[in-house]
Length: 202
Image (spheres, one colour):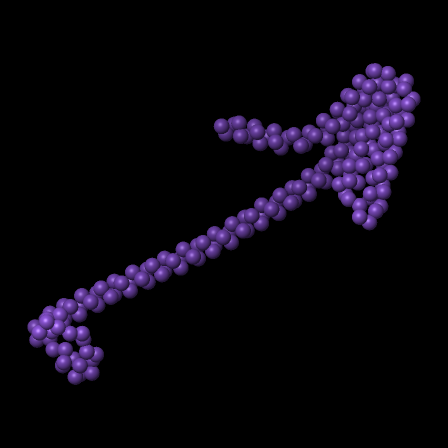
């Protein structure tokens, strides 16, 4: 069970790291398949890819220059422009050297951009973990204080009960002594004790 959990964790951590290389490799493979199916001699398709790449680049530039531009939309537009340009060149190039060179450049750029987001995600994850630990420590401290307070109250109540029991036992024992006179204690200035049970019955 532990080995399966470790393997699952390793795969979960490795898949995002391989995503940029998988994306650029997929574009290269599809472009070369397109090249093998006659894309190299299709001028209309070449113009279409050029127009789409230029449009995506213009959209990204407009989003980046706008006051209310969205960073995610800008990144997606520039990514689409680069992908279309890369696919177009890889599809219409005669041999493999130029497509492979572009694939290497695109992969390096993809990992450069992805590394930035990975650092941000890692920083946010560390901040969240730190806040969670601090919150747990605060709750643990409050729980400890409450436990100590409850124990002190219980011990105080137990001590009070034991004192009351001992006092009642002492008063009962003293009242049972021969020659005990509560009136003499009252005359000497001591507080008067409650009458013994037999005094009520007398």
